[in-house]
Image (cartoon, rainbow, N blue to C red):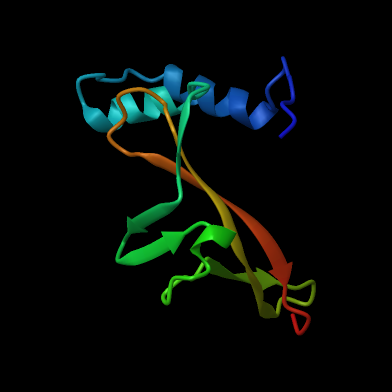
Length: 126
């Protein structure tokens, strides 16, 4: 994966950081500490998982070594509502394969930050 160096963060990042850092935060409160820490960059060290269970769902990364498993499933689906130009609501669906599970390190946060890297395919009937 190519690493992109960008010394100028996007305006939204600057705005959020300014709002959070401009408040009187009680860093003894776990929620305030999370807000403060999540406004900075994560550590360059991340944990990578091949299996994860969260919210009663079982996730497994797409890996040819696991094809022998009877319950092997690395499929993932996403459905969201999108409003069209004429104000109709349309459901757009994507399906794909889970390629990586990364847990980012923002320090002593109460809320873990987990990212799924997926290879997406858009349904043709959308």
